[in-house]
Image (cartoon, rainbow, N blue to C red; front, side, top):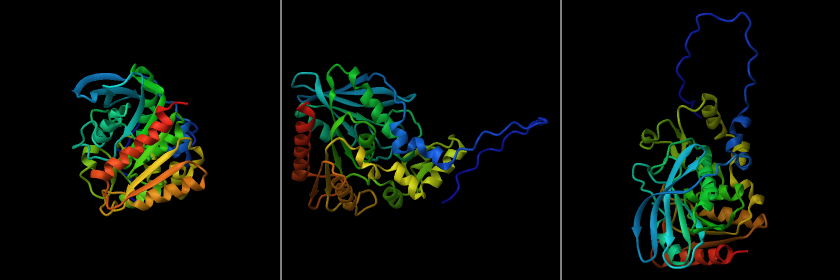
Length: 343
């Protein structure tokens, strides 16, 4: 594993003290990575704030679409809210976690438009966070998707500020990278009543690293045109050098990767899951191998938890036509049973 870039040399002091102070204990690799593990995220002090509408984008016979923002650990995160036109508020809520897009191409709501409109027709208010560094959001660190998870949990905290939303009835939908974010959220926060994983990345971080490599370090705009690194993680160069080195080291440490991976903490799941994949997915590097969905489903069943698995013959990373409609019908039925119906 290559070493991260060296920091600038420290300034030379004019004189030195006669007695050196006792050095602070050097944190171990495990201590440095702990905040980014499943256990560390469960211990995180999440923020509570309000969802603020910053613009009305569209009004149709089905929904009204707004651009929103909310606070997340000192950052401002943008996203999309769609409120159904039909029905009576407060509406049950589905949080839509998008997959990876190059940030230079991404527009708020990308990857969630079709599914959000379908769910709006079925009486759900939808929220699609951009996450940090996408859309109009501020940039902040995210090691092993941890920052994205924090942004989604902070959105859950902000749902009570939306008059049209029912904070006691929340589901979650995640595509590709958003499926990986969803899995971590489910093990950190028990408020989500049911979740759909669509062409999800692996719940085992080792699989993700093997396929796409370690996160890119430095400026996001520059990193995304680089080859050989995975810019779904956000590793600003101004992070402490020992933390950057710890990220490198943890990426090849079997025990630490298990600590960051939801695959090894399935006992924490409380929400039923529906996992859908295309049998032709994963043939290009932009896709996700079907084996990842099958591996997760079997592990969830072995853990005695509730899950469904559906393979869509001949479909790729994003479904089309009848397959997409069948997938969304199944998604809506899951949400109707566990989210809309209430306790």
